[in-house]
Image (cartoon, rainbow, N blue to C red; front, side):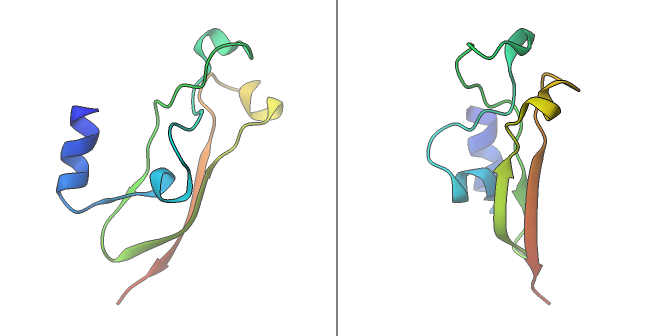
Length: 79
């Protein structure tokens, strides 16, 4: 968390944090569904990228490919 806090201190927006409360499941250790949610992936945006949406995709089709789930973000660009 210290590293994440330092990244935020540079003025970068935590995209997942803006649209979710608490941790978001982005990894399943050993890809087991009964493991507690664990966030090991983040998306940060500069001030010229305004997050419009950001979500972790938590579906079995994605977990079949990796123990990390995809995170999808949409942005508006500020000129």
